[in-house]
Amino acid sequence: MPSSGPDPDDRRVGMIGLGLMGTAMAGRFLSAGYRVVGYDVDPSRTTDLGLRGGTAADGSRAVAESCRRVVLSLPGTPQVRAVLGEVLPVLRPGQVVIDTTTGAPEFAPEAAERLARLGVIYLDASVSGSSAQVASNEATVIAGGDAAGFEGSRDLFDLVARRAYWLGPAGSGLRMKLVSNLVLGLNRAALAEALALARALGLDLARTLEVLRDSAAASRVMDTKGEKMVRGDFSVQARLSQHHKDVRLMLGAAERAGVALPLSVAHERVLDAAETAGLGGLDNSAIFAAYGHPAADGADPGRGGGPGPPPLSGTGPESSET
Image (tube, rainbow, N blue to C red; front, top):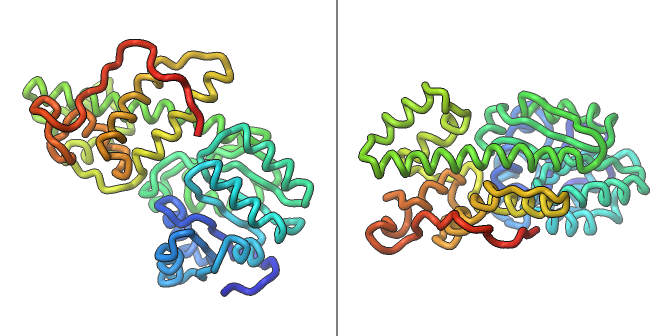
C-alpha cells in the first residue's frame, strides 16, 4: 500500500480509473519514468498496474493521500462525483485533480469551485482520441480550469497527446470535447453507412476504402477505423457504449442551449440500435455492424435476425443526459 501524505515529487502520479484509457495513460507515465499509484474498482486492473511496475493502491483515498497530482479516467460524471466525494476528506492545498473523463460540462465549474475552497485545482482535461492513440502519443488534450494548473500539468499532457489546448474556465474543455466528438462520431457513422452502401452495391470494401482515402471524402477516421470496419475487427480501442453516452451528453447540452442537432439525433438512433444488438461493449467501429456486418453477432438484417439500419426519418427521441 502506498505511504500516506502527498508526495512532493511530481514524478509520482495518481491514477483513479484503469480502464482502456486509464491503462494507456498509466503506461505512458511509467514508460517515461514516472511512478504511478493507481486504483480501479476492478481488482484485476489494479493488480495489472502493479505487475507493470506501478503501485497498486487499495482505494481512491490511498491514491489521493499519496500523490500531489491525481488523474481521473472514469466512465462518466456520476463516477467522478462519487470519487471526489470519497477523496475530499484527504485532499490538501496544492494538489491538482486532472479529470480526463468525458462528462457533463455543467459539473466541472461545480467541482472546481468545491475543490478550490480546499486549495486544490480541478482541471477538466478530456482526451480526444482512442486508447491506442494515447499509447502512441497521438491524442489531443482539451482542458478547462485554472490556467496555471494547466501549465503545471503540461509534462503529463505531453506524454499522452501531441497537442494540449487550454480553452478557458472550468467546463470549457468538456464543452469543446462534445463539439469535437460530434464531428468525430458523425464521420465514423458516415463511413459505416458508406461502406454498407458499397457492399449493397456489390463493391469490394477494401477497394472502396482505398478510393475513399484518396478522394475528397477522406477523413482521419478512415485511417483509424476504416480497416477495422472492413475486416470486421471490433477489438476494443474505445467502446461504442461510451460514444453513445457522449452523444446523449451532446443532445442534452444542445437542448439546454436551444439548438437543434438533427444529425446527432439520427446518430443516436443508430447507436441505440447497435446497443440493442449487444454491440455496446465492442469498439466504436462496430457501428458498422448496425448495418448488418457479417462479422457481427446476429445475422444480416436483410436475411432476418440482427438489427437493420434504423429508420432515420422523423424527429427522434427526446434529448437525454447521463
